[in-house]
Amino acid sequence: MPALDRKWWTLITVCTATFMLLLDITVVNVALPSIQTSLHSSFSDLQWVVDAYSLTLAAFLLTAGVVGDMFGRREVFAVGLGVFSLASAVCGFATNSLMLNLSRAAQGVGGAIMFATSLALVAQAFQGRERGTAFGIYGAVIGGAVAVGPLVGGAITSGIGWRWIFFLNVPIGAVAILLTLSKVDRSRDPHTRRIDWIGFISFSLALFMLVYALVRGNDAGWGSPEILALLIGAGLLLAIFLVAEWRGSDPMLDLSLFRRPAMVGISVATFAIAASIFAMFLYLTLYFQDDLGYKPFDAGLRFLPISVVSFFAAPLAGRLLAKIPARYLMGSGLLLVSIGCLFMARTHPDSGWAVLLPGLLIAGVGVGTANPVIASASVGVVPPQRSGMASGSSNTFRQVGIATGIAALGAVFQSQITHKVTAALLSTPAGRAAAVAHHAQLVTAFTSGQVRATVAAWPAAQRTAVIDAYRIGFSSTLNHLLVISTVVAFIGAVSAFGLVRQKDFVPSGAPSPEPAVAHS
Image (cartoon, rainbow, N blue to C red):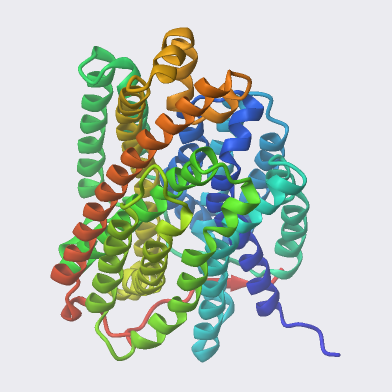
């Protein structure tokens, strides 16, 4: 049997690492209630489990691509694997929420390094028609990671515990590092690059301050000096970032790319799909487990409709892209996501999970339609030599969308849930008795989602009154979050239809410089 060619080893290695890092975006959602119980986390802590990862992934992505160009993509990719694997082990051993969230941030750094160099490694290994095949496989792996994430997370959490979601990354990462150093060719950019420190620092701090303000706003007060300072600081730092990128000789994000309306439309669409349906996964998970009382694996099963439909819609959208302009596919995908979110915004206190099913299926078709078109169009509207930065920009907008979407929806959730549940609770005698006897515990339970665990040992009448009131408040609040997601996705659809013009696309036959390659 002939030995497997090095280029296929490269694809296997890159796909394994990419699957692992993307799985950690979705796999954690279903485990969040178990993590909350184990580490006694607050609702804000839960948001940071996801946001810490997304923030550092977004902040380091563009800079990591430059580092790979400067010092060698293979070596930098291996370093990213090492950081990700080590941080995963620390996540598994976490004894409190702060330790978990800091290690999740470190995971995001490693993930950014891997993600930023992965496509360049595949592009250097394959040429001609084989490159299209390789990218097709790479895209299928991305879709598969998103599709199976909730189910894998639920199975591991229910079976051997949430910590193994992170521990399993360690042996996989170790094997991937060995394959990278032994089977992947070296490559780097023959042109001199430099790190855009002003852009990197200003963008990272602006993003962190914005998300931190959104997470802390309800507790500290939106008009408090702390929150106002954070929001003003985020705005000033963002302005510094834009000036630095506009005037810099080697910016981490070339703003001239956005002179093409299509690039603006794609970026808005990417942000919108992430800030709507993907940000909603956290709150749908809380609905399945904290409101409806499902175990992690059962909750993961209920995400299968959107995951499976999305997985099968993606390749169909990829084939249609050769016949239908990108603006129509992308816009239609976002419109379906918007309609799906609106269809889901019909929950009521007595509804089961099936009330979400039509919306999950519609949104799944939308996600599967929009995602591959966004990936293709983001590099199709720029010259080939700028495709790496364009792809990095698209992935950055996606992670920023997830981070800010979760934080913004969380701010709405926290501001509404206590008020709505308390109002429902005070409408019954048993509820009023529970509110008087356990006021402090209930406030914490309402905002953290730990209602069932909090009332488990209470008298039956009070327990029933609290759970009924919580279901009334949660369903109403969830509907509001879904309406917000409907609007966000609709804005993305309008941007795609209006701005992603076919004349902005660069002909695919345009020449592009090949990266320098040296065999180890």
